[in-house]
Length: 372
Ligand code: KG4
Ligand code: ZN
Image 1 (spheres, rainbow, N blue to C red):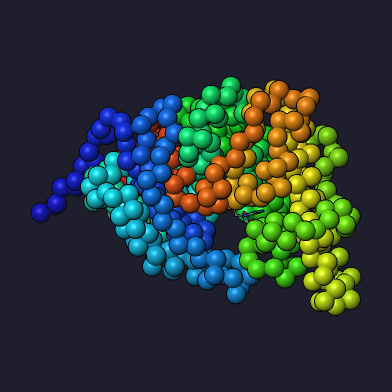
Image 2 (image 1 turned 180 degrees about the vertical axis):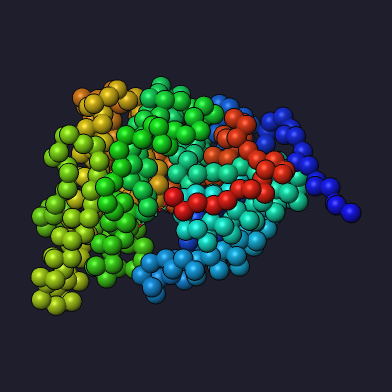
């Protein structure tokens, strides 16, 4: 005898409680977020993240197979911890949001399969979330950060600067009105080769710093002279394109490193090397942001993605730095939500849920993951 499928229950009125899951790379993360509805910032009730950085560090980068296995082992514990921290039973959840693209395919599949099982078992909607939309949603994760952003007029220039992506977007609406395909249709430019975070990481590796290098290059730069070494800023002077390029910079740093007579002299020059490389990356980013602000009217600038944690980047992006533009304010996510986390996925899931972009039984069984 066929067993009937349990149907997905209808959504209740606001507030909604969402569980977010993020496993696209090397962070197994679960979070419970409460959302009062359009016009409000999602409130993070809990966030439990197991970072695999130490696991991958000996290899100098993420090993996809090892990442998937660790997600499988740690994600259920993160979900339990997130529910416990939020002081909620799983039955209290109204929806599950999960990163389904882009990322490491095996790693994504762990999150997607877990989310499908939970959504079916709890009879609640499943919301597939694009990882980059999650980073954008991270800007709204605290009222201090999100409220001023919601009250600044659009359009906003949005820079997604992470380990896998470096792109600029034109955003014309608040989260509940983001068109479903805006990541494709509202894209202004992207990196032609490495992402900015990737450049930080590769340069960190060349300089012998721990993985991932961005944070360490940032820290080492503190005492260094950003003009000590002359490094290229590819495409920066080319006003015909908003695209970025970073691979030439990495090659230039590799040549510099080779010119040092020994590891002692290289070590002594590390602060200057880090500061110079960081400045080259920031100048490249700034030149294109400035060009975009000259070409069109934008009232705000927002930067998200792992590189948005960079202290010099945060310091240099202020409206005063772009006097000829219509910029009123610059926004960054709270530091704890800059790098990959499940709270941003739950928040993006809430915005999509309000638009009706979610899956119910039996369609939720068909959700797949995609690496791009
Ligand atoms: O967004 P994210 O956590 O993962 C991706 O979606 O790629 O970004 C990770 C990237 C890494 O390349 C890391 O080195 C970089 O963000 N990153 C930083 C800093 N903290 C993290 N780059 C520069 N300065 C930082 N403080
Ligand atoms: Zn990310």
